[in-house]
Length: 165
Image (tube, rainbow, N blue to C red; front, side, top):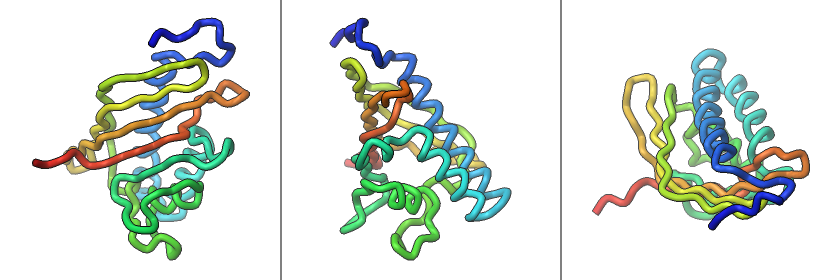
């Protein structure tokens, strides 16, 4: 679908590309903070990341993390996202801290995008490389909305490991 250029908060392909880079760089920053300063440093960086580009300020975020299950599969609150990214949470005891796994590089590979005004969807793969050179590929879908300040916010984040037939 072709975006309508006259929308005041029109999302562009460039906005999405920047958002994907920002998301990947955020996971790298959280990992480095954990390596350098431990869990409290990682939580501080993760909290700032969540506040800067997730849409929890707009309402619940439709967040389905890669490695979450049971009653805690979905994370509509910032507290749930923070626990998933950093682990070390009594409230979410099964979370190992996805963002503290030593990530050093991130690459996004687009399958397709949908843009309509101030809402956009992206689907593809994210490849994260850790400090040992191991690569983890994750199937991702992100939904974005621009808030009233023009900041692109993640309002849907669905993640899963690729199907292994």
